[in-house]
Image (cartoon, rainbow, N blue to C red; front, top):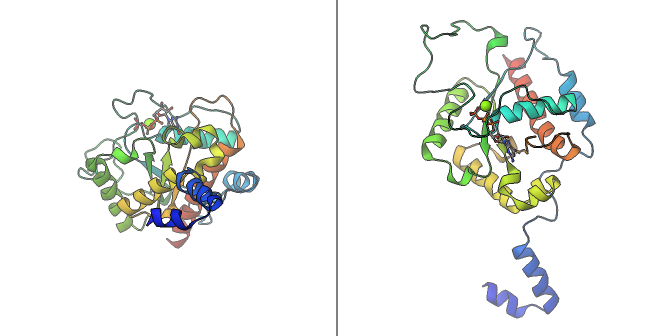
Length: 245
Ligand SMILES: Nc1nc2c(ncn2[C@@H]2O[C@H](COP(=O)(O)OP(=O)(O)OP(=O)(O)O)[C@@H](O)[C@H]2O)c(=O)[nH]1
Ligand SMILES: [Mg+2]
């Protein structure tokens, strides 16, 4: 079929078909980023829950060791403070998880340290965020995927809204590494999003591509834009959930 297409096309048509077939970027991003970050920044900084019984939003990040959960927390902190911060400990070796373990097959019981039998509205989780790294996403084990699905199912039963963040886009895609503005133009990353969406059952519009701050000593607008876009959606989802309680 392809051969037929090429045989019937003129030379310029052939050339443009070649470009289309082999280019790694869409001509337009499949998700537009705002022209500047001010609105999203103001929104995140001034956010107050509309449900007056709640003081703040509680967002649970869940994902494999080394996925970039702590880095994402630090990145959000860095964006909001407009300088690189490092409040949550990250681990470059990630042999064992730094962040607290979460095992749906062994729910906490009253005898566990820190178990809270009657959490207040403020102490309950209002948004679940699945965090996965783009570079190893294609080889994520079934065990981890099933665990993430279990956690999502438990959250769904409780009506908790969910979204996903795919980190380390710079490690998975050369074009994204060269210029972070290419993230939502990368055909490879779009395919990753589509496949992850189908596998975990998370709609594409609830999946966000992110490059965390890890080696930078200054923040920059393009990296901020990706982080703020994800953060804004987390806040909106959480606030809707709180309001409907
Ligand atoms: N290049 C790149 N590296 C990243 C990114 N996000 C995280 N990292 C690096 O990945 C490593 C692991 O990140 P962490 O934030 O510690 O991962 P985690 O999910 O908190 O891991 P645990 O707490 O062990 O479960 C660190 O060395 C980070 O600097 C990213 O977007 N790009
Ligand atoms: Mg961590």
